[in-house]
Length: 234
Ligand code: C5P
Image 1 (cartoon, rainbow, N blue to C red):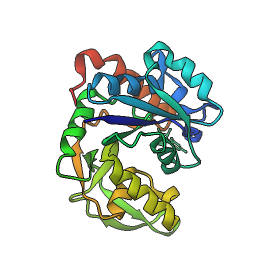
Image 2: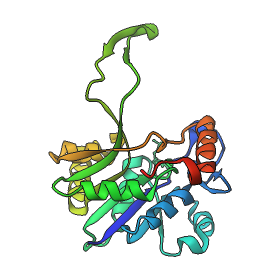
Image 3: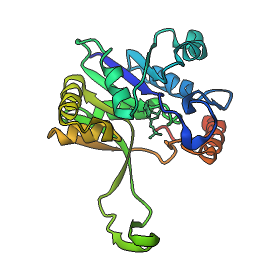
Image 4: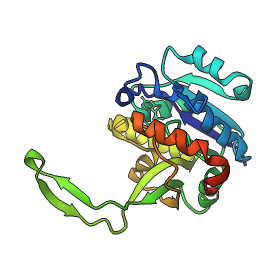
C-alpha cells in the first residue's frame, strides 16, 4: 500500500526569534527538518516525502536536503498550518492510499513511531501520536485569575505524526474550506473529527517534543546527542 508523508516546515518561527524559518535552524549539526526526513525514510513504510517550506526558501531547502533528500518534493506553504497541509496534499497523486502528516518542529520523530501510527490506522479514519496530559489544567479568567480547574481525566495532547486515508483527509480539508474554518485547525485530526471521522490515539514517548522556543531547541539537541544509547524506540 502506498504512503506519502507531508512534512510541514513552512512556519515562520516567530516564537523562536531566530530571524529564519525554524525548520531550517541548525540542530545537532544539520537543519532541523533533516531529522524528520531521515526518520520517515528509515521507517520503511513511507514511499515519498513532500516537504512544505516557506515561500522564498525552496532553493535553500533543496540545497539543505542534498543527496539525502533526492526523493523528496519541495513545495511552498500557506499562511496557516492547515493551508500548508492543503498545498502538500494537492501534490499527492490520486493512487496514494495513505498520507502521513508530520511537523518538522518535532525532530525527535522515530521510525518506530511512524510505523505504530500507520499500523493503528486499520479500522479507523485516522491515527495520531499523542500523550496523556500530566499537568493539572486551569482555565484562565479575568486578570489571570483561575476560572476553573479542568478535569484532565481522558485528556491527551495531540502530536504528530498523524496518518489518514488520503481520500478521508482530502474530503475533510474540502469540507473545512467550504465552511471557511480551515485556517483555524491546529492539527489534521480535528478536520477529520469535524467531518465525522474516527481517529485513534497512539501513545507516544514524551521525547517527541515540539520545538517552539530556544529552550526547546537546546533540549532537543541534548536528547539527540544521547539518542544512540538512551532513547526508547517509539
Ligand atoms: O507554528 P507551529 O509550531 O504550531 O507549527 C507546527 C508545524 O506546522 C511546524 O512544523 C511548522 O513549520 C508548520 N507550519 C507550516 N505552515 C504554516 C505554519 C506552520 O507548515 N503556515
